[in-house]
Length: 341
Image (cartoon, rainbow, N blue to C red; front, side, top):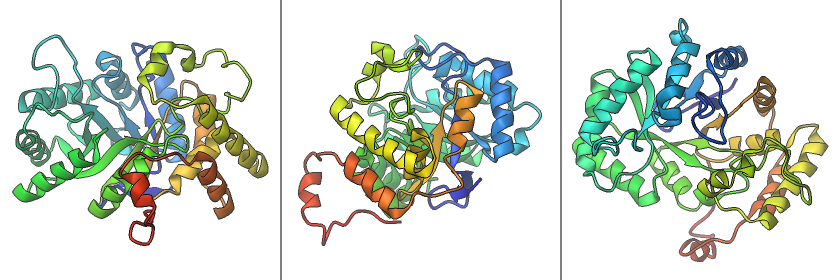
């Protein structure tokens, strides 16, 4: 499997990573993968060259990390572990956020669950506006220098959150973020408006979460047809927790994906994932799988590339109205061109 540098670091990651939100079964709508199933999924991934596995302390109350730790037991040297913290993990006042207290405890707890002495990529799961950046970033710097973390990233930051964090880290000589785990898909392209240009300018690699648009680009959702049995989109709570996408926009994109997929002899999700792999700043896509069949299908997204005309067709179908100031900037392409690698 192809590997890419993560941002401007010297750290290489596979272009596909396996997400573990389905591990544990306590996150409604995502899955209930146990140790035996998880071990089998890891086996398939390693056979295909997919070596990075993404988790978080909040997935299934920590059970996802525990299951991942058991699934990779005895082969830690063959895998890369990515995990996250910031969201609430308990009832106490300090069981949330990016304070020194919470982050040190979160990292130590994750290390125990995962059965390892270091985390390859540790990311803040969200921005914490209640904790001074100096406290957060100095703590992360200490954790890197102690050997418990190799590389740092963040997730779900706005442009100014990320830029200010990078500036503070640089001012103090602390370790910088080399990754931003962000929502991005052919059906939701807001990442391109500000976060992509920022990432190019500052050397931050994109770790894409939900590259299939919150389960909408699995190939099972079609215009004029009911949602398939077993779709997590049947749960209104799951829908409300995800990105808002109008049916009209969704079906326009799905129709274009289906047309390209038929021409190439590929599936809708394979085309959607391959499109992302050709976008600037993208280092790796976090794919999810509740079954071996789903995993093998997603693995089929690599090893080939969409032709420029297919990319252009999908870009045209998935274009979205921009909010201010992005629509204004788009009118001056001579000075504000679309980002290129």
